[in-house]
Length: 97
Length: 393
Ligand code: SF4
Ligand code: SF4
Image (cartoon, rainbow over the protein chains, first blue to last red):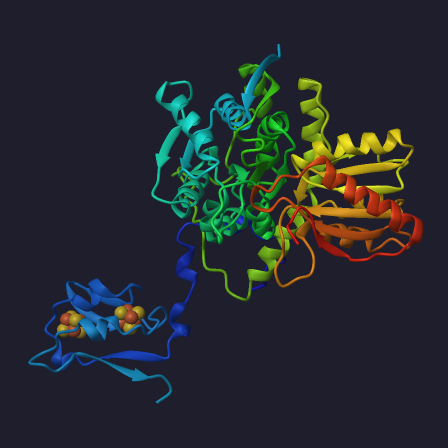
C-alpha cells in the first residue's frame, strides 16, 4: 500500500472510515502466542469474553481456534482459563520456539 | 451601538463569552481566573446563555471534557490560570494535535514553588509550545476584543486550532477600567455559527478521534500541523480587519509605539507595555528616540515581521515577566533574538527579567532600562546581557 504524504493526511488524525481497525493487524506485535489444548477445554468461553482483541473464535456456541492475525499475545486468556482439573487449556509459548 | 462601561478584566472577558454564547463550558476555579468563570456560571444559571456548564474536579478534567465536547461538534470554552494550566498540560497537546478550536482565557499568574497567586507570565510561557495559538492583551479592552476575535481565528477552516487569550492576573483581571462593549447581536454575527468538520455526534458519518499513530505516519501528522501554523498570521490579520470595521479598534500581529524612527527600543508583553509607553513619551520629550513593540500574536510567533520591525534599532531590551531556568535568557528574548538573527544589521540585544510573582513594574524601571539603552547605543558596550530588575540585590 502506498503511504500518504503529509499533505494528504486527515486534519487531527481523525479516522473517517468506519470499521477500518479491521485492517490493523495487531498479530505482528506478539512475542508469545497462546496455544489451545482442546483436551483440557471445558467450553466455559471465558477466553472469548476476556480477549481484548476478539481473537478467540466461537462457532455454534463452541470454542474455536485463535485468530493469530489479531491476537497480540497479551496472555489474558491463558490467565483466565480455568482448564480441567487444574490443567490449563491455554498455554503461552514464546514465538519462534 | 457601543456601550461604554467601567468593569474589571475578568468581567469584560466573561461578558464577551456570554455574548458568544458557546455550547459547552467545562471549568474549574483557580485564582485569579475564578471570578471570570463564576460570572459566566451566573449567566448560565440566569438563562442568559444556552451553554452546558460542566463542573469538573480538576483542570485536567476540564480540558479533557473540552476535548470531548469540541470533537462532538460544540463550540467550547474554558478558562484557567497558573497551576490549572500546568495541570492541563497533557491535554493541551491533545486539543491542538486533534485540531480542536477550543477558546480559553488564561489569567496569567506565577507558577509554584514558591506558591504565589499574583501576575506574571510563567504559566502561559511554559505552554507556548503546546500548539495553541496565543493572543496577549495589554488591558481589559484588548482582552475583551481578543476573546471575541479568538473564535473566528480558532474556527477558521484553514486553522482549526485552540486559542489562549492571555491577560495579566489582578493587574488587569481585577482592576476596573473604562471599556467599550459591542452589542450582543454584533458579536453573534461576527462569530457566526461553528460547524465541526468531523462531529462525533453525526452518527450518519461515524468517525474515530485519537487513534494510535505509529512511526509510519506520526511525522506526517506533525508536519501537517506545523504547516497550519504558517497560515495563522494571515487569518489573525483578516479577522482583525473585520473587527476594526465593527469596533473601530485596530489590531495587528503586534503593536508598535513610536518605533519607526526610534534608535532604542523595548519589547514587552501585556499590561507593563502601558507603563512603558508613558516613559517612552517622557524620553521623546527629552529628544531621545525611543520606541516599543508589544507582541500580540505570540504563538505562532511572526518571526519575519517582528525582525523587520526591529532591525533598524541600535539597542533593544526585551523585558520578560517569566524566567527560563537552565537557559540563559527569558522566553520572549529568545524569540526576538531568533527573529533578528537573519539580518546583517541589527540592534545590540539585552534581556531583563521583571515583575515575577506580581512584583510591581514601575516607571522608574522603564527609565533605568531606557537610560542603559542610550548608553549602549552610544558606546556599543554592554555590561550584562541578562539582568533582573526590581529585585533586592
Ligand atoms: S477459557 Fe479455557 S476452558 Fe474456557 S473455553 Fe477458553 S480455552 Fe476452554
Ligand atoms: S493472548 Fe490476548 S489477544 Fe491473544 S487470544 Fe489471548 S487474550 Fe486474545
